[in-house]
Amino acid sequence: MSTQTDSAEPNTSARLTTLEEQVGQLIEENNQLQDRIGELESTTKEQQEQISDLEKENNRLEAIVDAAVKKATTNLDRISELQARELEKGAHLQTETVNEHELEVQGDRLEKLTKDDGQTYFRLPESADPLDNGSVSLSYGDLLPIQQLARMDDEMLQSTANALPIRLAAKLWQSRTDSSVGDNPWDIGGKGIKEYVKASDLKHWIRRQEPGTSEAYAKKLVSRVIDAILDLSKHRVAIRKRNERKNGLEYTERRLILPSDADIPGETTSSSDTDTDSLKTADVLG
Image (cartoon, rainbow, N blue to C red; front, side):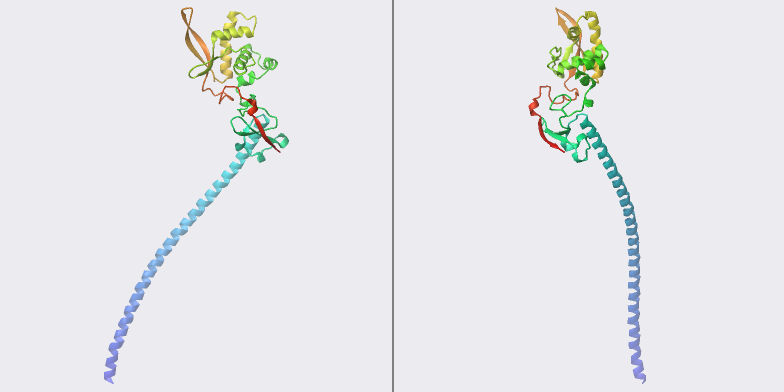
């Protein structure tokens, strides 16, 4: 009996040692799992915070987008309103800049036409260019004051401008742009100058326009007309002095010049006559 008991004790001790080792391993694995769980929980918390930040940023961006859309819609409405007003004032607008379905114009009709620049424009039916030129797309209000005055007949000019220098300035501008006027004191310029008129030639021109004007008074009018045309052209023209020689004597004379790069509405392409047959009506939209 004692022999069997003694032999069983080592087996029991070995099993206990094995179990203890296994328990130790399980404890170690459990600790590793706990550490891993802690890491995952920390990572999850960071990710949740990131998600919260992203949601806040997304909400902020959505608010910005909504505000931008509302502003864009408002701006489009304003643009459509401004375009409608310009069309009703006689403007021609490039079709690519106009959403014709959003415009509310008199008669609810737009005419599409192709000009000599190859571009297609919208206008109200039978709404001609303010400069009678197929190459521009302006409303009357886009013209310089001097251009507006130059388009008036004598009666309208007289009622609009009660000052003689202003009326003469308008006629002087008309003489360079309207070949039917006939009496044109402007000369073709050289480098950097499109056209010019000498003060002496302007004096003689004034006396032809206002018969009976004395030479002394015409000389005074030259300065006043020059001042008027500078102001009414918004200083698109300028004054230059140049040395002249006559009868062997040298003297300095003023010139009223139009620079080649002057920003004159309707004269941005060419000063040559435009063939009005090149202005073609494409169709009318109702």
